[in-house]
Image 1 (cartoon, helix red, strand yellow):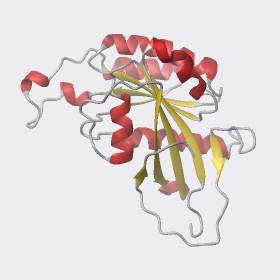
Image 2 (cartoon, rainbow, N blue to C red):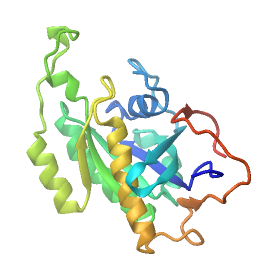
Image 3 (cartoon, rainbow, N blue to C red):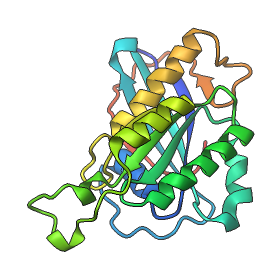
Image 4 (cartoon, rainbow, N blue to C red):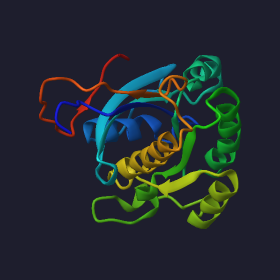
Length: 222
């Protein structure tokens, strides 16, 4: 992989109800820390991350757009759906309403995003319904959406599925990596094309050798 900073740049959107932990998932991915009390997202927030898909021998730069979960920003966030190759559709496992509303978010994504977009359903906050020594009993909540129910709906809708915790980091990178593997498979099959799919960009080899670290960066879109 000498001379290549990354092989592909892939655009992701993160969508779902407000307060399901979308911003915390993004910060966990990019900064490896937990955002306990994030401010509400106004419009969109951006983060990027280099990941390595070892079995494909590929380095991928993820460009992730965390979208607001309130109706007042819906027209703004829809514009970011266009050209996305991947989507994290997030709900809170302790909130049935957020799971029910995921249907509306999915319909919105499918209406405005690339028809070939890879979507992974992410049940966040599993730490809240799993007692642990460092979590006060008062902080525990009852699970309102079973793994089996969410997995079945994801299968019916053709979605990938994982449960995760932005607090502990459980399955956060795995969610993005699983979706990225699916997107790379679509690239190999010609579903996504560098010339016609704005959500996937092929990197051109450079003449200089680079030492890569799986580090994160945050900032404006490049």
